[in-house]
Length: 319
Image (cartoon, rainbow, N blue to C red; front, side, top):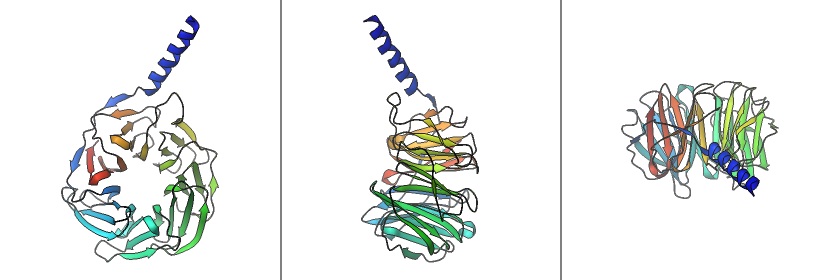
């Protein structure tokens, strides 16, 4: 009996130790926006100019723009379905994508939007262009299947399509002109020919929602069950630095990850989840006193960070 009690206490200590996190203060300032629609992505091109997208899935695609660092935002409705991703290329070319295969682009901020709907009409969750002639878009639906487009022009012209795949895909990122990575439902993969062909990594165990490579060799990905994985050899191998499906680790719904360099990074997620590391993910600190709002996407540059969240919320932080 004593041995049993000791074992229970030991397991309890392990669970407590695994759940306990140091805490840190990073004050968040809520910026005023003209919408209550969920916001799914945000990007700034300089201290003043920023963009955010979101909307309601079956009603409208929200577009926000600021020219004064987020103090004021202009709003527009671009589509009748929500927008999920945005990228600004060199020369202020802008692309955004979302549900029903919707893809929009324009050559500069003053140009009119050009519309492109992919025939498959599947959600496009993320797009990344290395340059205006080399891009990859990923998406899928309902945990059931996925899709990869390899585009040879910022206008959405494609030369390769992988569909249907067994895995819904959520994020994609180029690390050089030929190497691109993607993650999704139980799936992590790499292409070395700019998205024409793909090789799956030997790692699973979560629905990976986001990835970020601060360098060509070092990358991180996070999942909605609380898993964090890391590579130090450009996606050749990945290892779990937090196993979200472990019985001894609390489940956390991670939505996005951003690293400013190999060591310093952030993770955001549901119910105001905001974590910080400065040692490459070896340890994490919980940011205190965050709002009880689901955080969807983070952008950070030159000491200023922004978080796009549900209900039209945008938060700014300085670090």
